[in-house]
Amino acid sequence: MLITTLVAAVISIAAGASIRAWAFAIFAILVAIGFGSVAFADGSSLIGAIVSGIAFLVLMEIGYLAGVFLSGFARRSARLRQNNSAADSVAATSERQQS
Image (cartoon, rainbow, N blue to C red):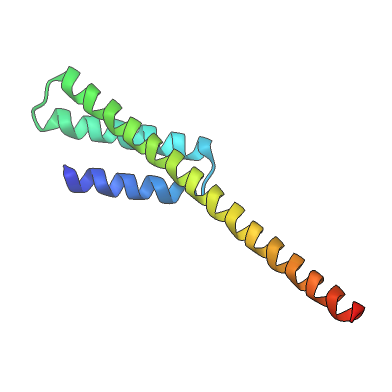
């Protein structure tokens, strides 16, 4: 169960960086239903299986949001680095022209 949870978290974080929210929501709901069904088939009560499925869904959604945040942060950092290097090269060129 722990390995399954870790795999779901990693997949969710990766999905946050690459796919749309509606596509991930459909995927996460289907995976949560499957996880709850497996828990129910393994002998859990119906309520326990539903709670497990919802907990798995919440974990996946949190992972997705973390992936969205991290990918946005990485893009902004790369854009700032690129803008700063472009500004530095323009400043260096203008200093050479004034000399």
